[in-house]
Image (cartoon, rainbow, N blue to C red; front, side, top):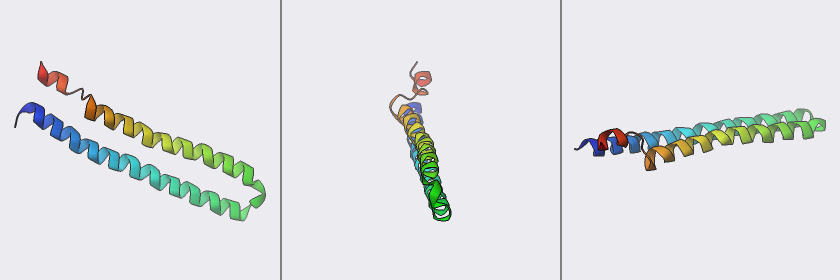
Length: 88
């Protein structure tokens, strides 16, 4: 195998693992956040506005982590910075 094909293969495998972890962990965090918010709502229904507002801000922050990992994975797949060193 040539150097370019090895780098592309390694980058593809790393991207597969990266996107799997980058999506799985925020999904688990979202589930935990929603579970905790529902538990808090069942204990104190009068503070629904505050809990829901905090929940939505937290979910947006967690979702941004998944989006950032997706962007990094797409950069590695389609514009691999390591290939510049091999092609020269």
